[in-house]
Image (cartoon, rainbow, N blue to C red):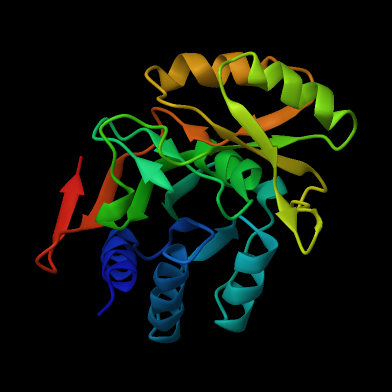
Length: 221
């Protein structure tokens, strides 16, 4: 079993009958959703809240009952991946471009389980460029303001055009050398006009499930 499938399926052990479940986005969350689909087929009764249009489509194909987040005030458990994490359970997310919806879902989740392979682990965040979702209007000005925080922002492209999120925004991938204080940086970034949200998930993850080199699983609580 590949590491992503291993940790994705492990996370579903925290899902119980009657729960509202946040369904993450990305290649690791894919395996958790596949497993939840199988469990639903076997009789598990849950309702899902997807974090992207891609996840909504996958969950629909697997016959997972879905709720509109507009009507949800609390989520029992959310399972989602990360692009980088440290041992304090601080995360960088947004490589798939769904960071805004992911953070909205995470913000009302009682339990947030991060699933990631061990290669995403860092002592200090910053190896992975920090995705920042920005309005298309004057994004160049927003990029200049971000640059003043000590990063190199780069507009994310797809097929020679700016990548557009599910919310019709752009993403600036911001390369910092080291992010020593993620909580402080997230406040500074979000104060910049034009910034919609950033991919730093600080003090959100309840536990991180990742694989070990010998094919096992480790859980950071």
